[in-house]
Image 1 (tube, helix red, strand yellow):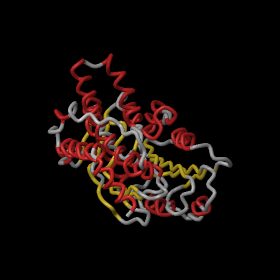
Image 2 (cartoon, rainbow, N blue to C red; image 1 turned 90 degrees about the horizontal axis):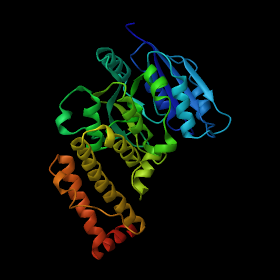
Image 3 (cartoon, rainbow, N blue to C red; image 1 turned 180 degrees about the horizontal axis):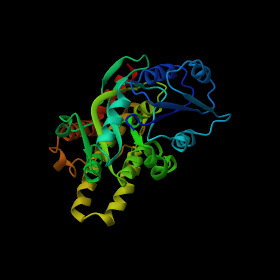
Image 4 (cartoon, rainbow, N blue to C red; image 1 turned 30 degrees about the vertical axis):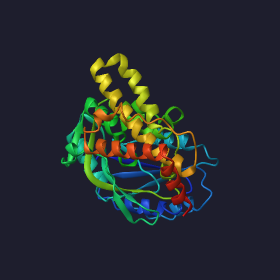
Length: 336
């Protein structure tokens, strides 16, 4: 088929302020064969009535409304269970999509039969839709490519070296892989990083594609769970639940040298993450502070610009934590 069916699933809950903009951007797609399935998790605002107001939609809309809130995990997994057609996506109810995101992704997957999913670059927007900045996801060595197909070994190394570079609601999957191989997001085990676990599991079935164009406006607002979590988090990122889990897998399956490389990258990311959470602890006056191992990670500081900046960030925040003047300065800024 020249235009195989694409199923766009949207989980939502109390998204009355953003769902209309999301739907308008989906109805503006230049791809001709789309079906939209929306899963409302017992919203208490006007989300459902806004969705129903799109009575003359360009594409078929199938609305599922729960009588009781089932939690985010069940609602997201309903999207997987109801996905159909050749390709499927799980879009978020507060993001805005470029009119050619689906056509470009379908074209990529048609040209790369070994890839089971493809993601795109993203821009950040605020609660009003104003563009904040482009999300910096790729290392410079890869950023020069307009698109790429990453093998299992290539993407795994990138995920350990730089963290989760993939914008979850930009991903288009092959439906059979999503529905029958992935089957569900494992929120109970990996919490807010269950999407990262999905990327690892996808790599067991094939390659992963990436289109280096910002085809999604990813919203950062006070209603965004991930945004608020990043501002207040004082514990290690859930990302390390995933990275540690797969390190145990690779400890027996991978050569010692490769395992040690991934472990080194993971420890560097942990240093950087604890610098961020220690700063949050400074601001919120939560103690004790997490240990930051600078000396054990200095050998990776020159691995890339990202690593050099991360090392100096970690060193600066460690100094703020250790020195009384640093803690006092942060307290003064907090009270200003």
